[in-house]
Image (cartoon, rainbow, N blue to C red; front, side, top):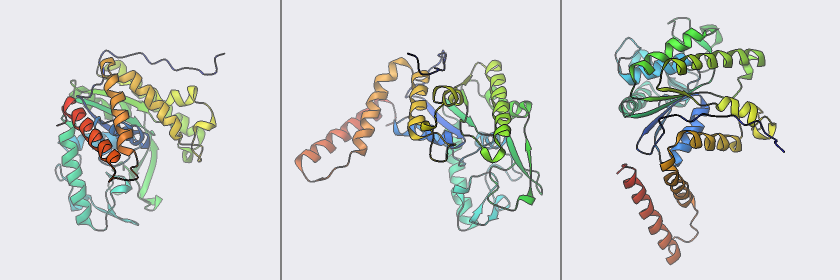
Length: 315
């Protein structure tokens, strides 16, 4: 008896290896997948500007990493970029998690993350972009589409929805300019219920249509159907968190397994299983570190870790 509608995901010609770097950008779903890649010891950077929900903010962040910047003051953040929020100091380029107690602390952290992410961006590898919503908020005074409103008064912003062409134009410039880099696009399965369920569907449809155009236009652009996996394979509330909006841990684990099955080169599968085992060893709670058994376990674990890092070219 068949109890599930399975999403067919055609394999790509190019496949992911442990030699590649992986930059994950976008919604909180990108955080979830990125953290799992990190835990399996892929060379990964996750959301260096914090969670970004809309395509224009992701495009702006990619522009800053690529080096030409979108602010008027060069490629580094300066005092003019800093805003005062109810929680502290941040910028319209960043998620609230970047908020600091002073402008100086914010700028120091933001510019260090920008330098690190720019260096990472130019490594050969993959960029995973997870789009969350086609709705954007534009700051009335500056005209900038913000990454986050930071709980500032709603009267400071104008809300609108992007068109398919807006999304394609915002992202295609980077795909086209970096043909040696592989781009994986996915649409977050997380519903933005504050928009209303119908409006959420319009938003997700806009993103799906835009991604389809990118994939059809560029050979180095690919689509991974995380949205369809949740909507069709996992269409049961037991696969949702308590808010009935975010996928549960079990659901995200399942999507990650499907992603690895689809993206990872066949000759890397054994190494991936080694990484999973190594992570389990790293997280194993040692009750008596001074015992001979514990010391042997730690020595074996550390040797396996060093060997793994050498084999993947990380050390």
